[in-house]
Length: 115
Image (cartoon, rainbow, N blue to C red; front, top):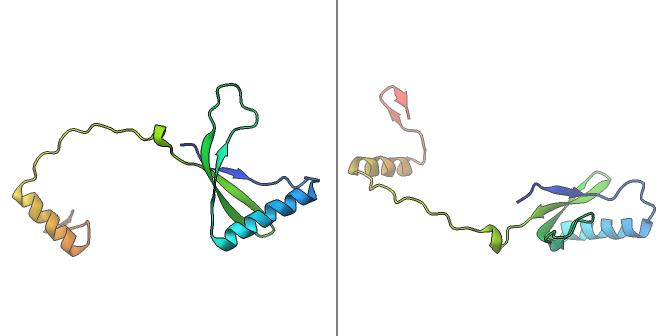
């Protein structure tokens, strides 16, 4: 998965209708608390570039608005990793884990030291 990219109309844009449409879309998405799921193909791509599944997340700050473009994982991104089997815990380890879970803390004071 790639980093989050940002889509913002340029300030020098002369297409007023396009700016109004973009602002309206961002405002409605924020108002309805919705994201958009889209297919993204880079504009200046070479042959063999695979379209990516992305989520567009709206944001607004002062008098500027935009959308974060976040790549979503697909079936090809999910892989199974083999792990070695775990050793069986001793009775003492089980008792310690039970005490930690009951106390709701990951730190346990034993004597003068904190573990």
